[in-house]
Length: 272
Image (cartoon, rainbow, N blue to C red; front, side, top):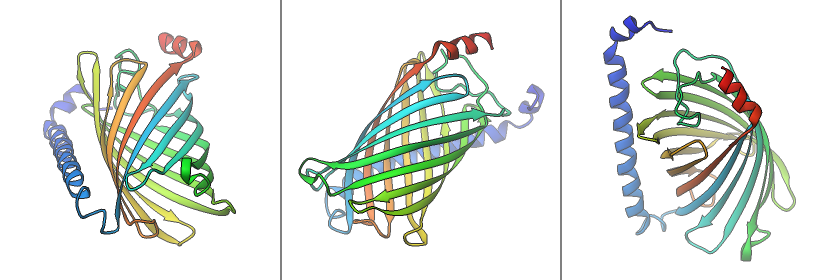
């Protein structure tokens, strides 16, 4: 860990990070406004589509290292009344130390804690279509992922994730798998009891059905929290996929996060 004196010797490094993050956030806002304008006119007709993804994520911290969660996203297609529902059930385990303290978005009563450097997660997902489109989409999936998280100081977090999806898609399911690699940068800003965490990430997908990287997804958004129980996240997504129904996908994703914590976990934090 850098000594306080060492930090003073490199102020330009942290200033550069701040300028970089602010520049990226501004660009993502401009891109979002451009997307909203363009998709309402001629882009949809040019092999593109627009979707809305409302989602609820429920988190339960069992201990400082173990956590359970359930994600419930819905896909709403702009060009039709069709809906898809997915349910994720998963567990993760975190360990290891990082060089810098990281706040963790006020989830721990606004007290800085040492973020764990590594995390593994595994789970199961089932998805199906709803309403008039029932039966058109069906998927079951097992997945496993590993995260490497690196706080850079000044509340900036850089992380990488490698994920493998084992999929059975369709009414007569055929097995396939995907390998995904995501890089992400985020920075926390605080105001009173509120926390704002803008972020950007990029993720290519390799699919066994095509033996190639067929999908690239870019996301920019913000998470807002006002205490240890709730947070709201909103982002803009652009996805390019050679083998999807439409190559260019634009989506708005709105997520409600709800957090719970066991008595055991609270006692462990209080004693740390």
